[in-house]
Length: 382
Ligand SMILES: Cc1ncc(COP(=O)(O)O)c(C=O)c1O
Image 1 (spheres, rainbow, N blue to C red):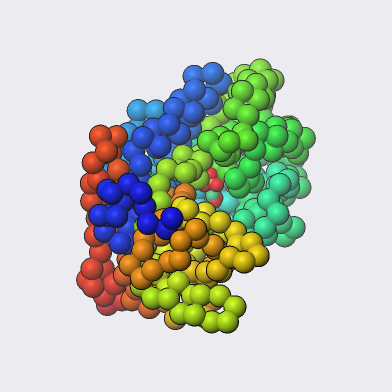
Image 2 (cartoon, protein in one colour):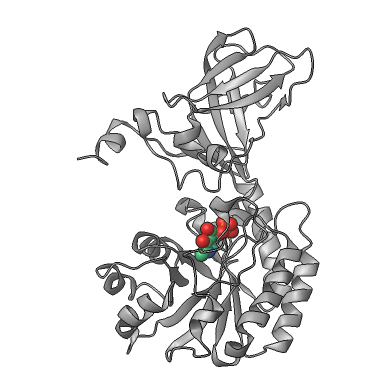
C-alpha cells in the first residue's frame, strides 16, 4: 500500500521531513554504550545532521559537535554547547578569527594552511590539529572516498618528512563512509603503520566519521575491543570520533504526495511534490535507490513506476518501483531514512517547494517545527 496505514501520517503536511524522536534516542543509546565501554568520545558531525531543535536530546549523551565551517561552528557553539571541533579543507583569512572563540579544537588540512594561520592560535586555549590521510578507505564510490590517489584531503605521511610541526597537538583521520567495524580496525592499523612515529608526540586522535555503528551489521563489541586495544598501546591519547550519518541513521523519513501519473508504454511516471536533486541529492550523486514504504523492486507482470521529481532536470527521477495497489493522484509516498545528508543539503532549485520539517514525538504527537515559504527562496538571491 502506498497510503500510510497510520492515520497520523496521512494528515502530515506534504512534503515534510519527519524525525522520529524514539528512533534518534535508540541510536544515541548505542553511542552511549560505546563511550561507556571504550575510551572514546563522540562528537556529532553537523555536516551530516544539523537539525538543532533535537540537540537537547543529544547533548547529554555526546561530547560535543564537529563543524566544517564558521557557520557550523557557530551553530555548534550556540545550539549544542560543549566542545566544538572544527576542520575545514581551507580556512579563509576572515574565518579563523571568528572561529577561534567558538572552537575547542581546530584542525588544518595542509601544512601550508597550518604555516599560514597556526600563529593565530598562539595564546588561545584552542588545540591545533592536522588532518592526516591514512591512504586507506573501503569506500568504492570516488565521490565519497577521501583517500583516492591524489586526494586533496589530509596530509600524507611522506609530506611530514619525519617532522611533526611544533604546536600540532592532535590528528584527525576521516577515511570512512557508512563503514563497518572491520574498516575501523584496519584504519587504526594503517594510522599506526604510517603515522606511528608521531603518535607519542600528540595528545588526541580524532577518527572522523563514517562509522556506521547504528546499522544492523555493525559489531559494536568488536569496535569496543579494537578501540580498547589501540588505547592500551597508546594510553596517553584522547580518542574521539565524529559521526554524522550513524547518529541520524534510519531515524525518519520524507513524506511526499503523488501529484500526477503519466503513462508510457514501458512504465508510469509518478510525479511527486519532492525533487531528488533538490531534497535527496545523494540518491542521484551516490547514486542509491532509497526504500519507499510499501514498495518493492518490480518483477515480471508488475506495473512499473518511475518516481519523478518536481524540478525540470531531466534526470530528476528514480526508478523502478512496484506497489501492491495502483498509485492514485493524492497518494502519499514515504521515502525512508531521509534524515542524514538531506536537510543539510537541500536547495530551492527551480523554486520547488521546500519540505517542511517536523517531529514525531515519543508521545505519538506530531510537532511541526519549520515551514518554508517564498521568502526563503527569494532571500537567498538578493
Ligand atoms: C572530516 C569529516 N568528519 C566527519 C564526517 C561525517 O561522516 P559521516 O556522516 O559519514 O559519519 C565527514 C563526512 O564527510 C567528514 O568529512
